[in-house]
Image (tube, rainbow, N blue to C red; front, side, top):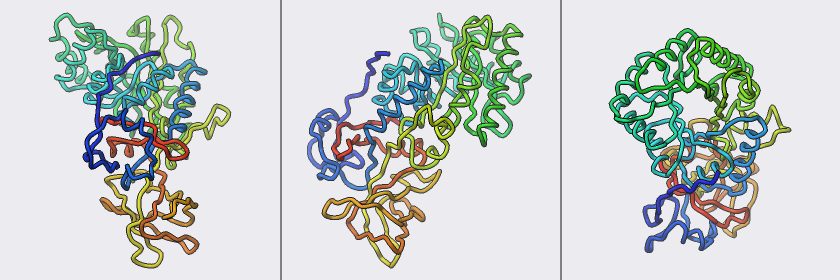
Length: 415
């Protein structure tokens, strides 16, 4: 898919976190063409970087996985909120971008995104009217509903938009203990019927999210229920000729392919849309452990793309180093950052050895220094991170580096 997104013409200056740029502002393109070295003086610490080769590899890997299994792909944009990465995902075959909030949908529309899947309930009348107006202009838009009350709220908002096309809605099936979604097939059927009967709305299919389940077996059982729910709605004559079924975080996309891919709904044209998002950068933490490619190594692999470089500020006592990196700069909700390399004052790199982050404050990390490890004030440490969704949102600009630490691009995020 060739889509030219309207990426804002941004500049970098003293306001740009992670860069040391006291002089006149320059454009992102101008900065990138200068090919700064990460350790050449244009950056200050801490700074999060993205490995270009890993990003390219991960985008290609999931694109090929979806193509092999006959899945449409609408990668979740909440992970990065970066139009340059959205453009790369679309170029690799994605048909839309998924989002979690109305504000993220508005941003995607401002970038020129032709189609958005809002993987959530939308109940705010203002954004609902905006969505209906955009759909009238040809914007592709899907959102979820899981209650009759919600359906009525949606209908009351969009029916006031003159000349509008129906807003396409997916009835969402959840599971006990999960987040949104009807908890039973009977409730889902009731919601679906309410959508069919509501002015200004159109039932497009069924939505699900399996990522909160404890293991692949539980995810499989739940997705079997999703499939049964779609058959039930078809039998009740609530579905149109084209039916959308969507699921998939970055934890069980192999199970989604196994349970939902294929032509299993006679009499309908089925579109199964995967929504994985964290795959684009992967990580050195939870997704390294959770990735489906551990179960299906023959289908590919993902590579961690995000790292934070931070400076040792103090070694105030034996066995302790204080590093200038904290909650404002690094993800910590799904595991603390992991020391990987140390850059000495002369620029040489060595393995981090027995270094371990014990805790983080706003701007400091407490690093345990094992008996066979040494660090000195002023040295730099590269950290792997866990959970990209809470790593990207801490940085407006993320340098993209080659293997030799040359900066070849800047990723601009819009959270």
